Image 1 (tube, helix red, strand yellow):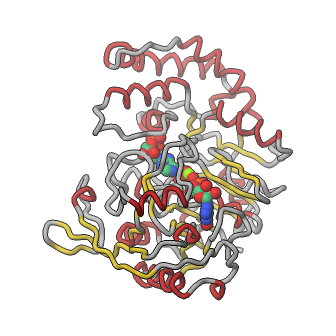
Image 2 (tube, rainbow, N blue to C red):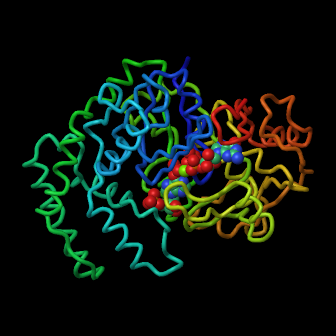
Length: 421
Ligand code: GDP
Ligand code: IMO
Ligand code: MG
């Protein structure tokens, strides 16, 4: 086996969790390298659904190591809740198989408070529509070098001092800029200390663990390429680099260790939260995709916006991530549509363009150029090979390969682990 990176090629929720769960069987270790509990990764095994926000999606395979890398922002309360939920299902979540990097930044209550205050203060068209999980404010502290790292949990005095210092500045903003309640440093420390003590046995050197599992590591991306802080639809993005290059720096290995790179591509497009979405459908077709695809956010329960597959967006993802193959998910959701559309280019400022414009909000001003293909009626949820697919579905997949320039290696036709070939 080779090390594998799985990443989202669109705006998240492509089905990364399902594919990671499936691939984990042949891996030794699965590592999250960015994002936090803004992610919601859904696994379905023997008909039973499990949604993971922080713990890597390989956890349902006994014996596999689950690692949380330095590039993640970890809410320790949510981490412990997730451990408890899994333990209640009989899953081994002992420190023998789970590790959090000492360098991982932690989300504290003031990050969530700041996330809510900032969003609350924005006008309706300026809101990012964040998940409210404190992701952005935690990454801000990391970059401004006042963040708290999981390794600090072993030193309560340092922890208390850092919380106190952080709140000096934040309370000014809470009280005098946003007009919300300030937080008490002592109270935050007392709330977090027992949780910190619980996390302590999980702390370790993730970089070394990856080196030891060399060649059998599965890197699990969160969010999607167009939510990337640099390359996404800024400012309507998340606060981390979601592209595959960050699999190396966010976990502590060399880019040379990233071998097989799998782009997860939903057979249509969805987006949760604000921001441009050229192929979004507001009428019948959008409703069809939303209802047949059960498109509700796995973290916030919000209805996902839906539209046709945007190959311009995919082509930029290919350029940024270098996938060795595509994994197409939710192909089954398209069954029953008379016609399916693929966006193959944009009209922009009177010109036809093959890649997204690079200026801020450019994507809000493009007009999609569609190719329309005949749909198919057959239920394909039982398909287990290309031969089981109707000719029109095969033609749709072949067109995706042709325009993106990347071969399809995996096709998913239902939420269950086994509904894949
Ligand atoms: P992630 O964030 O990329 O892991 O994706 P989510 O779990 O947020 O959303 C994907 C949703 O689609 C989940 O409800 C999955 O159970 C479901 N899903 C994944 N693959 C398929 C598929 O091939 N067909 C159908 N119908 N559902 C799928
Ligand atoms: P998974 O891993 C879809 C979106 C939010 C919002 C923006 C910023 O399940 O694919 P944040 O809370 O990160 O500051 O919010 O990013 N977002 C996601 N959308 N799937 C996700 O994760 C997302 N994580 C964040 O809706 O628009
Ligand atoms: Mg999700």
